Length: 217
Image 1: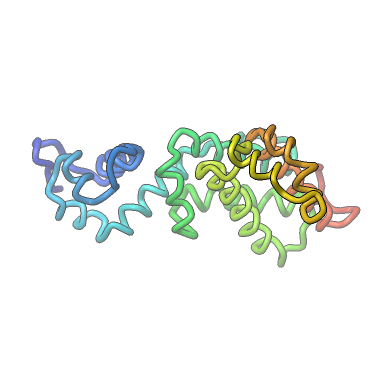
Image 2: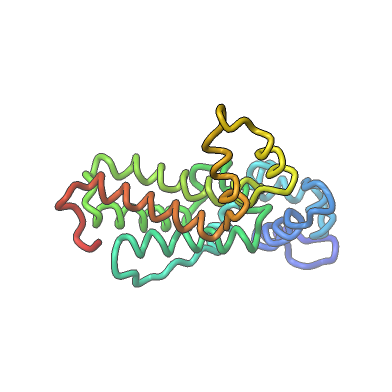
């Protein structure tokens, strides 16, 4: 096993944890050189362990996935999916910059597979046809992670004063709904958006399962 410059034992786990800290530091651009400096170690040591920046970032995404710890005893399929989705959001709020890496890798490792298995079981319990489970699993993750990323990047937020003023200038005839809903957009609450969209997504799963689908709704 190689050693860091400080003489400490250099492991993949140590490099990944330092890389997460570096990524969360918004004061500078993330790079392998910055990670190596923070470890500290030679940049080639990182390449030795991960092969490339993409390899390190995939390991970081896996580390983020491993922080997601949903309830192990959810009583219904809806509760299982809701718990998992809320956990992803909690972790995203704790590691907002590193969480974005989850968009780059369809599969990151054991934790990812474990969470996918939770979704598989929930969808089967909901009554989806087995051939539809993979389709809905990918759609569920894309919807949940996409919604969380949108919040992290500032899409899910109230209108600013400048944006609200711009809405006020729109024509009532051309944009009647924008004009009537402008006040609601000023009161947007990210928590409510997340919960409302999540509930609607799960209602859609129930509907796709048919009137008799689902062992526990």
